[in-house]
Length: 174
Image 1 (cartoon, rainbow, N blue to C red):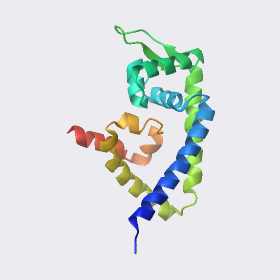
Image 2: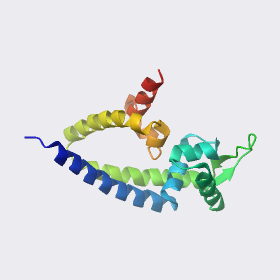
Image 3: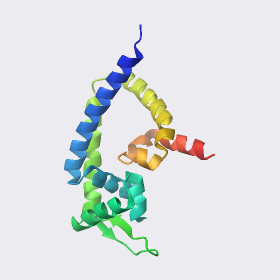
Image 4: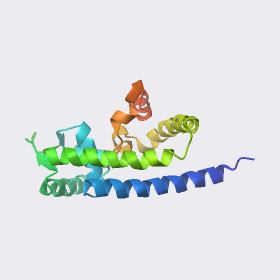
C-alpha cells in the first residue's frame, strides 16, 4: 500500500540533498552568495535590468538587492549602465558572463550526476512528474522569474520542449 507521507518525506530528503549540492557547487563556481549566483544567471538571460527588478527575480528586498549588486560590481562581475530616472541598470561584465556560464555548467553536472542513478525510462518518467510538480508549484511561488532563478533556460527548452513554468505563467496570465 502506498504511503503518501513516506513519499513526501523521501522527496524532501532528495530535494534538500540536491539543494545542498547545488548551492555549494554554484556558489563555489560563481564565487558569490546564492543570491549573487542567481543574479548572474538572471542577468545572463535578461541584461540591463534595474537593481530592484534583479532583486525581485532573486527574492531580495530593494535594499538587499542594492547591497548584493554593489558587491558584484566591486568584484568586477557587474557593471552599472545608464540610469532611467532613479533606477540604476546593471549588466554582466565579460567576467560575469564567464562566471554565469561556469556556474550553470556546475549546476548541470550536479543534476546530471543525480539523474544518472535512473534508467532512461525512469528519467523520462521523472521529467514528466517534475513538469507536473512545477506547474502545481508555480501559483504558490507566483513568479516564473523567481522559481527559475537558477535555471538553465536553454536546457529547459531544448529539442522543442516547453518550459512548464513558462506555460503555467502564460496560462495564469490569460
